Figure 1: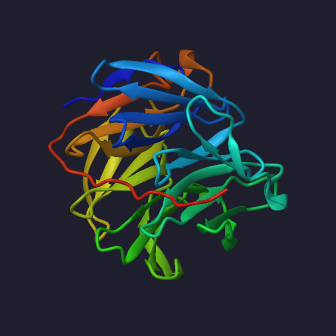
Figure 2: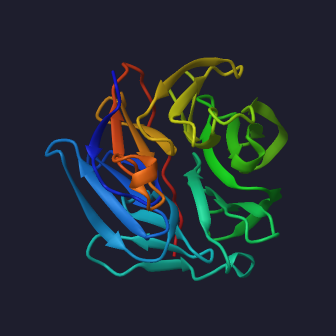
Length: 288
């Protein structure tokens, strides 16, 4: 099945799609514009539901609220019709940058990465339910997509500017990451693009979006390429599974404000159904 546009929105940087099983809708963001969108597959309608500071990613909280990770290291809980409930006002080391891609773990912690700021590298943090923030990696070139193995023993982690998806041994009890090693290195070639957002399906295969690569690439757990899906836009930014059976695939893209060069559908939200099953994402349990 070819990717089809379900929300023709000119997102500067569409990112972070996440299926909300309680509401049976898909949420995603336009990072620099601070826009949070929602698409309802039943009505086939989409809407802008929140506008604020740049949003680098979000998780679904245990109670169904959304936990937004924003500019300057700010973190806030969003409930429709209410003011943001701030968890972290700012992180001193991140005041000149923003979060970029986050994921909740089985215990309700959140692994949250940032963008670099000038010569200062990006970081990867872990935010625990009690609000404790722990720096895990401090020499990241551009923190990006993450995903857990089905057995909860490993975490995949993308450093876009290193063209690499890494694998860590993950301890669910403590949230510790150990034994970092390379899972996939993407060749430095114009038609390959750069590894961006990602997810893991029910069989343990890794699905990686390719910024400037016009595609999503699937790998088996050994890092062997299984397939790639072409898109009619170059900047494919992130992928997730959703729907009642988690067989719907949602993919975000970016226009970077220039549909003339990126294509008339750049920035849109796309949908596929390949008969492949995903799994629900874990929920965060962060308290304000």
